[in-house]
Image 1 (cartoon, rainbow, N blue to C red):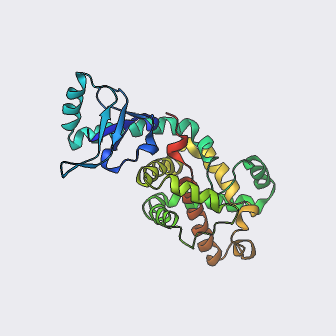
Image 2: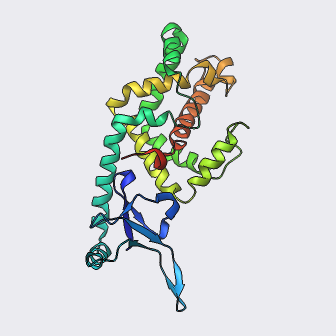
Length: 263
């Protein structure tokens, strides 16, 4: 079969030609009968190239019916199944997004409450957080359609522009290696999560927590000029906007969505 569903991501359709068995071991099912399947990689038989396919673990009568039905999937069928899977992921994200974000490799969010307390006490910090809200609210489409794709490339290619500390490098290397074969799917889920975070009213509290962390002086130290420049100057606002939008996308892209998603 050309397709299998990945139960771990709400039933996302996986295409055999793009799959790596090790990424989805134990989570692949037949879209029709829901029985477990495994990936049979492309191989040569009698000098003929046989494409990759998903195969049932057990040879039963129903298998031929499954292969026939799944083989007839139209573009519309695929879109319907994908939309249903996305809906299940979003339901889970609405409940557990903050829990998932704590697993990101970009910034520690464990002390968010301490950062939030500092924001309440220091007027300048509060003003910076408020400006951060304006940036996020006014640039949703730009972040999703421009900043995020650019960050995906920078991260996957290990661009020198990404300032990764020596201590963090092994973790990033492992993360990228493990997600190399499913990077497209990883980025798809990251975008869904980021869009929910930026657009949904239900994410207001989570946006506040995130901004308290990213706008805190301990985080801004990564770009010292943000601590030195006058916050009212165009130069500061430009640098801060670039910093904030990039950091937000890095956070969402460095959550190992496929590994931790437990739908």
